[in-house]
Image (cartoon, rainbow, N blue to C red; front, top):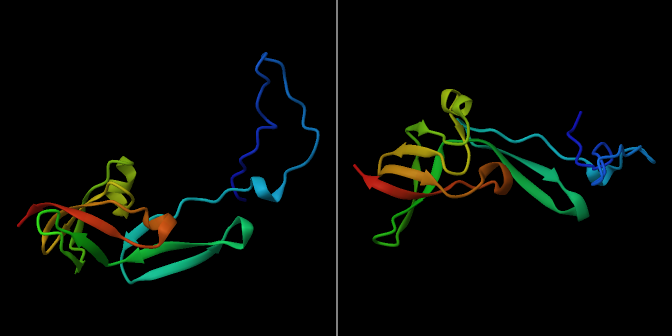
Length: 129
């Protein structure tokens, strides 16, 4: 079952209980996070509100790396996941989110995009090897 983002279950500002006056609505429905991992490139199209689509990156082995000194961007292969500051468990499972530190042939990079939300993996070069 999907997570729900309604305020019917919360208390009033005065501290009183709020009684549900209706059932759940579809527009209040959320979704579980897409945990992008290193592997064969796989993406999923997810229909969102208003007929829009969200591309969810399930797994990938490529990253677009930008070098801030030269301004050059290259598509390189991911060697391994070094650290994920979002969650200690993500560290162990090699899950890629925004802020994850990756190792590539160009050097160590930090992810700047949200792969589970935008479907693309962009990163900035931190240190060269």
